[in-house]
Image (cartoon, rainbow, N blue to C red):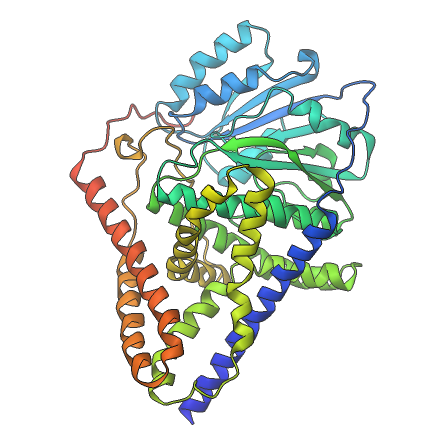
Length: 485
């Protein structure tokens, strides 16, 4: 009885993973069909008012660079204001205060905003900033991003020309794609999302999302949708769905590029991915029902479901891995028709190749990092699975920002020591290696599959252990701590 139950679970997981892969394949076809459909930049007779919101929390390494970039924005000064939404508790506040005063003397309408408490984290800071402005449009940037001077002139015209357009998202670039193997792998993942997935969703008329930075919102759209909420850890995805379900439309402009920092530390990357996985799952719980009740087409509903389920492959894969060795021992997998499951491994290389081919003349060299992307996707299965379950259980965790370094992370007090997930990763490496030894005897076709996971879990775990040792042996630099005003 028990083997039959395990086989049924295995088949269900395999089918769900295949459906996810089919969704990614449809996005790939949509991209190929619509990739050249870019709306021209409309003319503008008069420039509207814009507020630049900069949510900041302990960013001493990058805030000077951020403010220098904002000061270079080519936009009428009388129509532009800047809010630094500073919840920092270290010397970031002192750095900002001096720099803000200099920019103000140079004619920039800039405000250093401090709250009594960090209520609502980033979402709370953005919502508080909305109460302090009457600007028509809101340009949001995280602290590590550097917009080009013509950013607003290349995005605002779309919003002025179309009163039903609620948000314009631009493409993320990278400050540090070649810092180490970790950033090289992330580069492929981020480019795949912004080149293929965002283009496909937007041009095919599907629901898409604001990415949290590098986007301009119509203030009325934010207010109509209920404002920023800290109900989930993905406040950007949350507001995106609320706005689009009300009928607001979004536009993606991949020709405008805003470079940001890729986490060069494994612990920081794992923390970022766990936050995104939990936040996306919280949005899945909140908006799956409204999506299917909204006046959307069937394709919009199906692809929105696939979008909200973007982190579900991790727990499904985890369950498959746990079931594989005992089912191999019971000879329960050898006769199953699992050919369709190969689709799961087909779309990542195709999307990565297309994204790099589109962006860079040296795309072949950049694709040498694809094995790293595979190891990250596989090795973080437990990290993201744990976050997905936390999202389903409704646990309210602290918003843990991804530290920004703009330097070697080892010399920064922001470096993270990591958490206990490393031990589960090493345990899963041993477990899948044990499964591989079983497969050698009874089902050799499973050996590469299990071997890949054994290596990936081990690689992630050992990398994380090395970082823990590096952080533990070097005392963190002292900070001048200040409390929020």
